Each structure stands twice: as C-alpha cells, then as structure tokens.
Image (cartoon, rainbow, N blue to C red; front, top):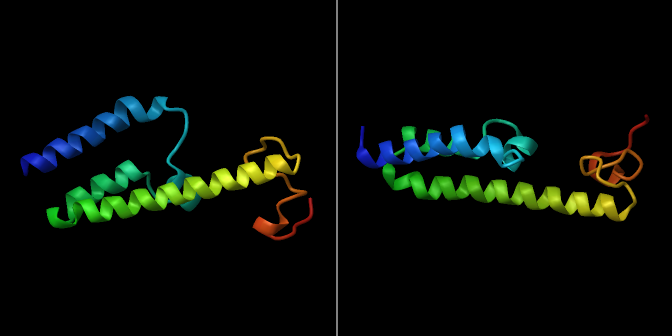
Length: 104
C-alpha cells in the first residue's frame, strides 16, 4: 500500500475508533442525507480513487456536510423562535413550510 494512503487511512480509523464516538453528535451528512459518515466516505475516496482526486472529492463531501449542518442549525433556530423549544429542530404545528402539512 502507498505509504501516504496508509497514513491517511490510519488517521481516519484512529479518529473513528477513539474520537468520533465521544464528540457527542453524528455527521450532519449522514444524519440528513443517509449513506455513510464523512470519515467513511473520505476513507472510501482514498481507497478507490486516484491520489490526484483525493483532495477535491474529500473537500466536496465535507462541504456538503457543512451545508447540511448549516441547514439544520437554521431550522432549529426557526423552530425555537416559533416556541417549539428543542424538539429535534421541529414541532408538528410549525413545520408545514419544511415538511408539508400533516395530521397528528
């Protein structure tokens, strides 16, 4: 295995095993779009794509995750401003603009 690839994959695995579990939240991309976490996605990029594409593809994934996080934060603030408190970012009475209307 390429020594750079080995080092990067080792750092990602260390992060996943020892740090990620303790940070208190999950990857925003995983939480809102499904699939795999960003660390798993970046490891996959490193394992399957040419080295020349690693930085570009990893940056795209992390940018998508940041956008998902920012959207979630905006939604939580909007829900809190409407008096919903912190119910996972939404309450059924004020989220028609996000999810469409529904009956309880």
